[in-house]
Image 1 (cartoon, rainbow, N blue to C red):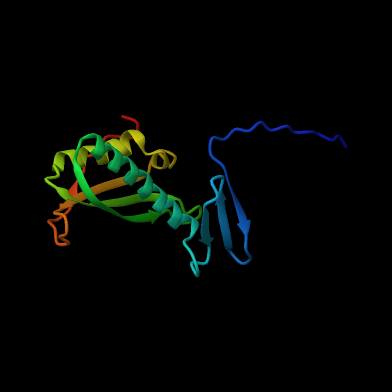
Image 2 (cartoon, helix red, strand yellow):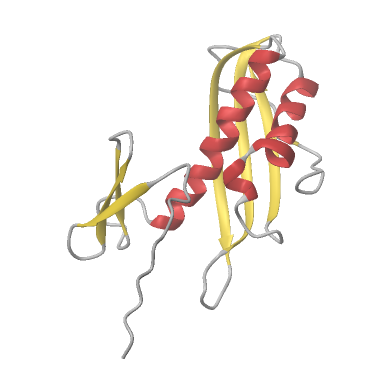
Length: 164
């Protein structure tokens, strides 16, 4: 039997490792030293699929904040609520996501908020662009005045196709 030596070149810009803690529990450890608890049984931490949904939301939220800041919009608070639908049977990948942005600030323009969300999902959000091309995405937003919780209904963001 021949022995083969495989030499792998480092291919990553980003790396992390997972440490198994027993059961279906893991700790993700990034190069920067941050840790993420992961629990496939949903007992003590988020599942991998919940983390993926959070990652989409976090990626888009970072983009939206940066874009609105570049537009000189006066953003004071942002919350992103996400829901996902999954394929049945296995593999249970996401088939659809609804992403709702609640945005607080003074004199925020609905056009600027919609544009920032659209740019995130169509151009910048690396996590979203790493998912299946047939994933259906619905993004909505509503604007709140600073310090006020009650708001108008969500407004749908008209989205271009991925990469447009």
